[in-house]
Image 1 (cartoon, one colour):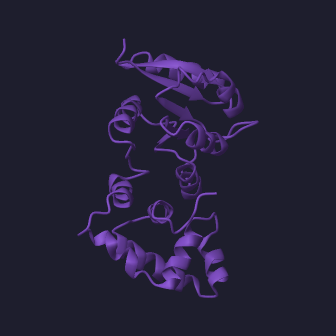
Image 2 (tube, one colour):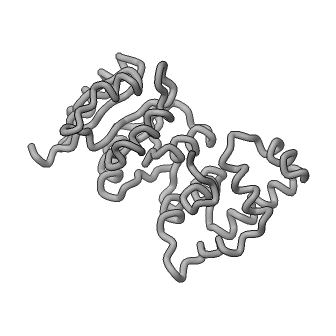
Image 3 (tube, helix red, strand yellow):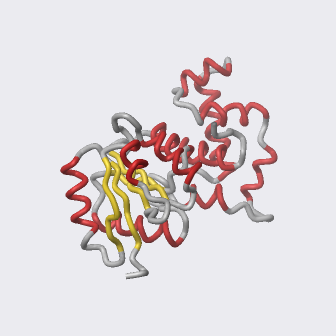
Length: 219
């Protein structure tokens, strides 16, 4: 029993929590430690000597949402792994959860096998990689070896760095173009050039790179 890893489920839908808890009971080596309807209730239920290994964290919840809860855990219990569990697959939601400390992002309509894999990978490798947060994206921002092509970071222009900062916001590309006083096509050019230099494919990947490499500071 000592090898059993514990899970906390934080979601404001009771039926979903119960169903998820029943599912996890079939995963060898895992058990649900606690359930909570929102971040505030979750924090009140925590015991310092019995912290969960993984927190499955919904984003949209009353009283204290997933962003605030993930940030609280990042500050107070950084050893606890957070997996965002949501119906939202927008870049802005993903970026924001990663900024606040999430180690992976699982959609609520994912297959049980993917959830089980998420548990295994977040514990063994520190992050869970899937089609939303690809292995290539996450490794690119965490493995900057001396001869890595990703060291192209030092050759980024001032305008590319400025674009990266905007990419970490919830602004659209048209709004970013207005802020930078350029055309939307020029902004697309910055994005494409950065993706080529850093071997990334999405705005999410660019934003995570900027955050992890100190271009954008987490408040």
